[in-house]
Length: 327
DNA sequence: ATGGATGTCGAATAGAACAG
DNA sequence: CTGTTCTATTCGACATCCAT
Image (cartoon, rainbow, N blue to C red; front, side, top):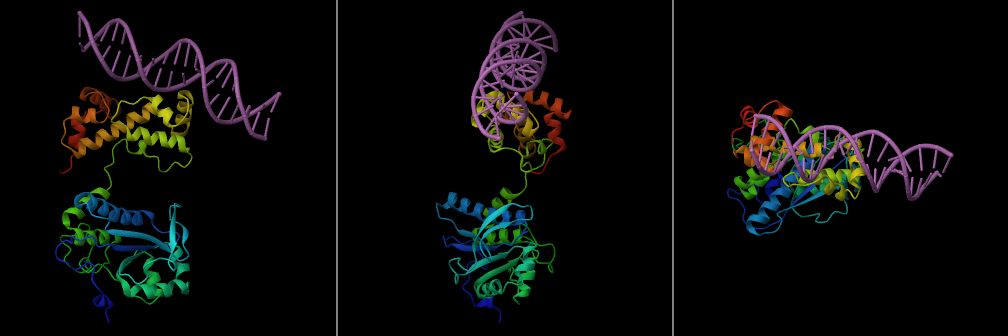
C-alpha cells in the first residue's frame, strides 16, 4: 500500500498557492560528516520563504524547521562546523504530518546499525509526506527497509517549470530542488523565484577572495567583527578610527592587529570591499557608473574609473560589458 | 629580568578638494 | 589638466604595562 495516499495532504498536490497560515514541519536528520552547504541551503530556503510570507501577508511563519540527530547534541559537518540538534526520540509532534530530509555523511554507516534510530524512522515514515534522503542518507532508509518518498511533482512529474529541475526522469531530484518545489507549490512560483534568487550564489568578482574571511580561523573575534563592520558600511564615509572603536582598540593597535591577521591594512580591505560591491553592481544593475560609485562609498564615477584602471587595468563600463548578464 | 601586547609620537605618503 | 593644500592613513621607533 502506498502510505502517501492515506495521509492528509498539506499542499503538495494543490494547483493554486495555499493562502492560509498552516504550519508545515520540516525535520532534517543529521549525521556526523553531513554536507553543510546542502543542509544550509534547505534551511535558508524555508526561512527565506517564511520572511517573504511575513512581509507580504503579515502572516506567521509557514515552515518550522528542526535539526535532529540520533542522540541529539552536537553534530559535525564535513567541514568541521558543529550544529546543535534535538534528540529524535524527545522531539515533539511525533504523529504530526511533516516533511523529512535525511542528510548523508560518514556517520550514516554507524547510524545504520542503530536499532533505536531505525525504529524511530519506521514510526515516523508513515506520517512523512516527503522522505528525501541526501547522499548516504539513502543507506539509512534502505537499512530500515523503508522507501524514499520524493516530491511527486518533481520526481517524474512536469519538470519544465521547476526552478531547480532534476537532471533526468530516472534520477532522484536534489534536496534543494525539492525544497524549492515545495515552496513553489505552497506559496506560488513568484515567491519561490524570489527565494531561489536570494539563495543563488553572488557573482565572483576580482575582489571576492580578498574580502572573504570564512576560511581564516586564526582571526580574532574583535578583528573579524571590525572587518565585518567595514564590509557592512562600505556605502558610508567611515574612518579607520571608527573601525578601531568597533574592535575596542586604539587606532595604532587595531592597525597592527588587522594587518597581521587579515594580511592587508584596514583601508585596503575597505577599498577592496567597495570595489567588490562596485563590480557586483556593475554586473547586476543598469545604474550609471557615478551612482554605483556613490552607493559604494566612492566619491565619484571618475574616482571609480581611476581605481579600476589601477587595480584591474580597465574601466567600469568595459568591466560591465565583459561580464554582462541578462537582466 | 624577559617577552608579548598595547599605546604614543612623529614622519612619510596617498588621496580628496579646490583654484586657476 | 595641473598644482597646492589639507586630511587621513600607515608605519617605525620607543615607552609602558603586565604576566611569567
